[in-house]
Image (cartoon, rainbow, N blue to C red; front, side, top):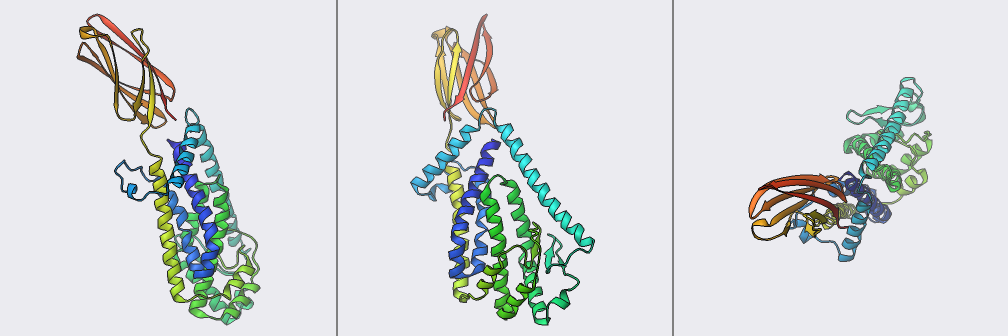
Length: 382
């Protein structure tokens, strides 16, 4: 069901963003900015894990359970919220989400287009930036050589070159995509700004590790004046990142062993987030149960049927016995009922009906001049 997919997407993105926002500063202080930047991979990894196909009862996820209280709470939230959007709301929610995602994408595209149009008109007077996604383009102001001395130019260009080497432009495009997909989650937008900051801090750290000259690098930062563009598909030398925090970070240093340990820890946390999202998804994927209310030949039996398992009811006896067996399955936003009817032990007909949750359906079968009309109402047990 579309609404359940969107719900899983939002829950996974929100939980991952909250975790990274909580851990990024301590991890950066202990292990360097590179580890904090790597930790952001937990957000897309968790979203992909939450959208993965559900495993069966014998899934390997069964050996990687969440702590019982966490799994129970997460499963309850997922099932309760999913139940609230069933029964006619699915299409409305899909339309609202799609409208918001398209509006967010158009807004980002307009900002990018407006900026690039200004570049073609020669209106750029800010600091260096790397622009594009697949084919990066370095943009420099006409006064670049005048504004920066030789040592500063070397460091500034090294900064942009590191962005290109690491694929940061692709990472920024992925960030913009996630903001569009989870546009109604405020944490994703807060996280996007922190992600871009951690990207710059990590790049600064790499520049200093390769070239040193922290004082010269700080002077180059202070020289740059740049309007708050916040472009989704660019890596900007100064951009809107907190200048004070970047300069303060230049004073910190961590040993190679701590940097490596921090990146390993970040990778473990990313894997843990993915497995947790999959475990929650699997925990909420238990078999469904359905109430089947029947009306047949003056009787009104009631069945509780487990998803995929056969349930049946019989009326009469011997050669006059009518029997109807049912298998109930979810079918997207509907419920599918497969029915087999027999009379006096003789199979007559197979029927497949699709009804909405708490919807009704009916069919008629005849044998030896006798008719049986079966009416049913099917609802999922929440």
